[in-house]
Amino acid sequence: MATTLRTSSTELASIIQGYRLYARTEGKSPKTINIYTTALSVFENFLNQDGLPTDVTQIGVQELRRFILYLQGAKSYRKHPFTKPQPNGLSGHTINCYLRAIRAFWSWLVQEEIILSNPFAKVRVPKPPKKVIPTFSESQIQALLAVIDTRTATGFRDWVMILMLLDTGLRASELVNLRLDDVNLDDGIIKVYGKGAKERMVPIGARVQRAIWKYLQRYRPEPANPLCRTLFLTRSGEPLTVNRLETIIENYGRKAGIGGVRCSPHTFRHTFAISYLRNGGDVFSLQRILGHSSLETVRIYINLAEADVKACHRKFSPADNLELRGEKRRRS
Image (cartoon, rainbow, N blue to C red; front, side, top):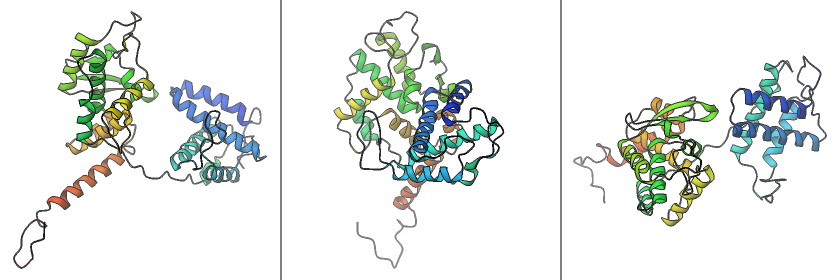
């Protein structure tokens, strides 16, 4: 059981409101705050359903462990307002995300001196399964770009956006939120505002520089709002949304007949990272370009790139491909 320093307003539902305010003042993105509060709401519902205490001073190791078991046995979309429950359970990544969010909340409780000890210190959060990173092959990228009609304003805009995703690894939100003032074509640099409103500078290649210049000169429509400075606009002059960008790429993927990989902006982010390392880029500059705060997230790309090296060695090993006297030539 957690030890308390203050006894007023320690009900979970009440403290969640204060935590949401804290997260906003710390510059957390709305998406991150939503993940935190959703996880805490799921936890609170579980406690209420099982008749367990909802006062944070009374919630301890046993309650947390029972919650982990509950998540591991829960069905996907259980009690979702719009989607029917699915026969499969929650993914390991979803469970890990929920628990990390709740663990961060409990650390905040200690930081705010609402409780003295953190029960998560005695609880092991299950690790998520290793991800299989989907990437586009070169032929798939060629096919995707080939189906875009660049003779039209909309088509050329889409071609430029996809080329930028491939060349920079930007997140979908980062791309659609780019402003004219963020693009420096002379220096080949764009200013990007990533998660947590963190600003970083991302280089762009010569081909992308030329494509953006042409888009601005010939194809960018007049904005519906004269004060709008967003780089990429719809035909009616409105800023693009993340959902619209995702739909555009998904439709081109379907038109190109691409299978075996999800056609999404995030797949381009993975493809950029792997291609960057394959082409000789270093992991530290990759971390800065992608906007990750630590190398841990980039490590998955390193492992894939190392696997590429091993596969190439197996194929082109000088010793294995050397014909030695006394050894039978392997059949081709």
